[in-house]
Amino acid sequence: MRFKTVTLCAFCVLTGTAASADVDQAARDVIGPAYRHFAEAATALDQAAQADCSAAALQAPYQAAWDAWASIDYFQLGPVEQGGRALAVSFWPDKKSSGQRAQQALIDANAPVIDDPEAFATVSVAARGLSGMERLLYQPGVEGDEDVLCRMRRATATDLARTAAEIAADWPDFEGSLTTAGAPENSRYLAPVEARQALYTQLVTGLDHLAEVRLGRPIGTPEKPRPDAAEARAAGRSLRNVALSLQGMRDLAMALRPEAQKARAAFDKAIAEAEALDDPVFEGVSDPDGRKRALAVERAVWSAKLAVESDIGEALGLSVGFNSKDGD
Image (tube, rainbow, N blue to C red):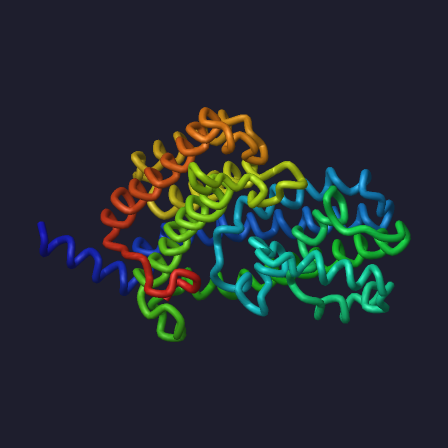
């Protein structure tokens, strides 16, 4: 049996068909469509901003754009990592409030860069993207003359749409490097297992970030809970980002190994725990019962990671790459 298994894997490497089927599905049916959906949602936000730049008019398309990003933001490989694009989409955590300071300075100065899309693209990533737009749409945020705020919303929406469109447009080339792993002309991934491991690494480190940062920061410690440190708190979607990110990672996990039913069940449980929490911005972590329920979500995420490692990683002979951000 051992000889037959080795022979089959050798054949897979040569043909690049059976061995890369899971990578093909992940790249073409999960990641690519997610980026296209985000680009469409960001474009819709930009179009809405050009038609009516009031905060009230933009909150719904903004939320839709965040929904689209939350399902794929765990993935930090390929075009999204080029030129700091991921940070330009969502700069968080911003521990020193650098984004708010940069935005406020532009507003106070009525800076010409606000009306110049090319110049605005050079503004600090902390002042742009979904995080920057949140401060322009919700309180507490930045303050100033409504005309300047309106132009800032339009500039931020246009910049976000451009970034999202670039990521979606550049994805097919990177997708090709994943789906042709092992081909003579592919210098990035020399064997199908390398591409599979790169995707697996994104999955595992995405779960790490979810537990340690998105949940861990607001949960804090029993002596010092930190609900104010929750992501997208002003927009009221801290918990929603957790649930949507879990759903996106479940899609990738099932693409990598459809037979991984233990992993699927663990993801389903974590998603159910998040959806049942009914604490949109983790305000309840300051209360013993609320904290207990938030910790249950965190434990479910860690359980999902363990299930992924055993049901996908061990089953496929994969391990997390040394550099978790680029899949090496």
